Length: 306
Ligand code: PMP
Image 1 (cartoon, rainbow, N blue to C red):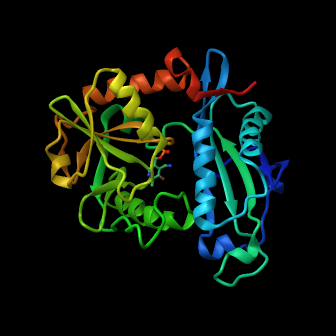
Image 2 (image 1 turned 135 degrees about the horizontal axis):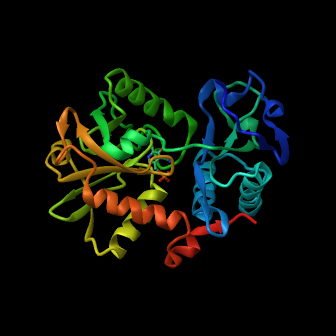
């Protein structure tokens, strides 16, 4: 079954999904030369609100800068377009995907003759990324045989399409092994991130955020650190090994799609009790309150779609 995204903002125009088409000679299709974002809008008592719109748009433009893509729209135009996609489709909650890519001008490996980039923003209704059961019982992870790429191999701080070949290989490997998600290590063997999530763990009541190193600087990670400190947790950013995760009381993953998802097993070892952790679920509940506009302290993180 094909996904349904309704009206898509396509190079400045709102068009039905069937009309938002590109050429088979698109540079990005051949070489992964695209950048993207992932946001969520949530239903709140005052209507749908986009979570941390400014930060996502800023990262989108930073990704473009890394790739030297020229975007023919300003950050303010992209902010407005993101809101317009939610509004035009009448969603109360959705996942939003801005994408910019090198088009079909020329297929030499150098992408820049294809500047300016083409841009689209699509949105669709998307529930829990790793499934309801993963949230309730905790996700099962395996450490991938695919390492996360070092900083001099791929630009892991940018959300570049080509980076996600590494994520896709790890995710398929995990799925083939019967796991829900993959944990990727960096080339030194330290914990990096999930295929699309940052990693946290808890030991003796202290919350450890796996340091940025080669990872994407996740916006959910940043939000969770702030929210957890407000809840009274001591938060430390650390370089961690996989066996430190085995010995943790709790492990969880965070991301725009995955939100806050507990991890119950890593490499066939139960984490703590082998169930969704208590602290994890407390932090998850606080995060869900914030995104749903139920905590006025974080009003600045929400952009209401009027
Ligand atoms: N790491 C990777 C590789 C990701 O793709 C994502 C999802 N964007 C994350 C971490 C989490 O980032 P965020 O919280 O900004 O969604």
